[in-house]
Image (tube, rainbow, N blue to C red; front, side, top):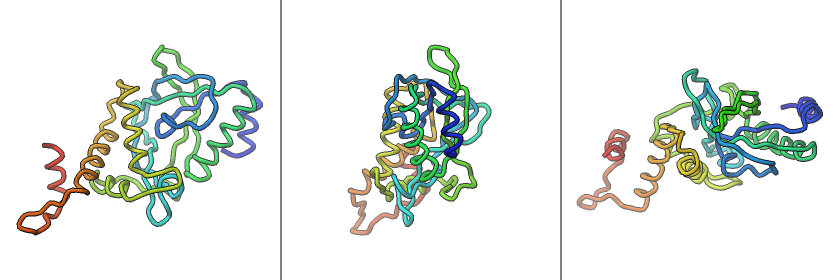
Length: 218
């Protein structure tokens, strides 16, 4: 979002709504008037966006959530209402730096469907495949391994994924995000295995991708 668009939005609106589906669900870091749980339609949440500041580095990028188009799907999250010009300015300036300048995200406006059946317009940050930090899809074992090895200014990439999964599970039971919860399961399983030496006759058993899938499914 450019400074011109930011100023125009602030001048036009006395309040705005911002939709969070990643760390904004549990760590907004801006002042808001109220919040509501609900969903936007036509997307899936995927950990395909790289991050080289908050949850990773240039040498070891983290993986954070973004949205991909999927006409039949919904993504549940939290919408925050921000009131007043000063609060809107501070919040959008912060988000513009955090999500757009550092994170590689663009902004779109979507309909938000709240639990109470109200529909409102929300500002959504989402990354495109053209941005320089985009990593794209890979198998879950590789993705989990990349996440476990990444750390940034805000903390570990593992914390980012597991806290998001924990928040969604506790606060948004309507969300059945198989991608998120499967990734969490891989990370927790591999973390547990990290501190356990797997030996047979003093020989370490290699953890192949096929074997990992087999053990997780049991």
